[in-house]
Length: 164
Image (cartoon, rainbow, N blue to C red; front, side):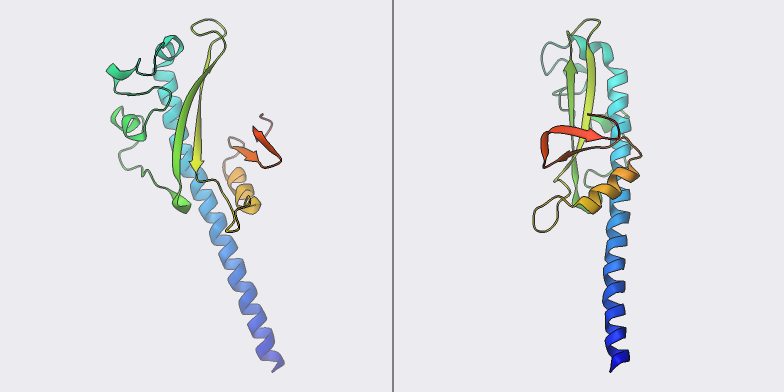
């Protein structure tokens, strides 16, 4: 009887350990998939830096194939050869990605800064609706310092490895 109870306890522990490792691998896959999207966003910024700094309307890059330069779509980036044709719009953990392009400073001008934010939808949450801190930690580690997170205790701040 004791052997059966011990075997059951070990089986339960092994099942939980396996599930946790599977989620960690999914978080790493999510970080890699988002890294490809980030590279496409960086390519978009570098290719159109001058136009983005001087854009007066959201459709300023329509002639280059972007309906709204503040939210370029993944199919538009694929058409511009900034994203591989095999890249899937739905990734690990059934996430999709959003892309926002923003400007800071006086644009156009010397203080103009154009930047992009690639973000996962929906957020990494537990089944109960809270932040899945273990999954977020795995994702941050896999993102190698390039990831930012919004924590419930500071909802207005994007934070990461030395970045705010």
